[in-house]
Image (tube, rainbow over all chains, first blue to last red):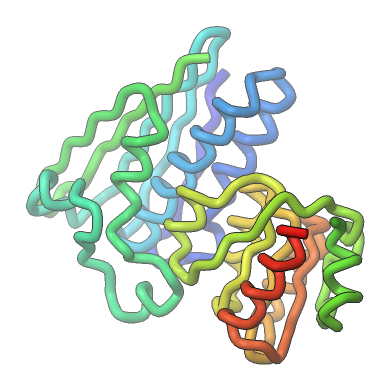
Length: 136
Length: 111
């Protein structure tokens, strides 16, 4: 099964749409609630990252009987230093985004912590591609 | 302890999400950083915060929280009310500051 979501850059109202839908689907499939909880954290953070930092992108979730694979692709601006972006507390979020309680530099670390595998690739001015997998 | 007991005990305002007033409270979480709540809050907890926008309810729903309490008489945004209603997660309010509200909730849950 593949689910696809468009994520609009800057639109926080829709953040949580993909994670909410994926949570429902996994529940219906009878996946272990502990695993669902971890995936939901990762997907939500990935959505918020695209909303807060990029011009927009797409999220694809592939689910089969043994695992879920999520791929999040955006159209820029890309991450200057991925190692830095992975550091807890480091963020390039705007003042407005921080005032909402986002941009604490916890997003990518939260994703890493809650997934079995995670890879991130980024090219400046082109975009970022993030993939993660959780096994059931 | 149910959310309705908490409302009665501390005279909390119920903004919306009345359907969830029978939710059982398993603990509390205090934070205004959404990723912190996303990463660390647990199912059945009451979240005390000063954030009033609708992402608060998105997180409360994703994390299966028992209720959200807005402190210092802060008013929720229109979208936040709507989301609370749709999800059936009570959105509550108090004139207390976070420290006082959290302290009272903690004492109550320790009983």
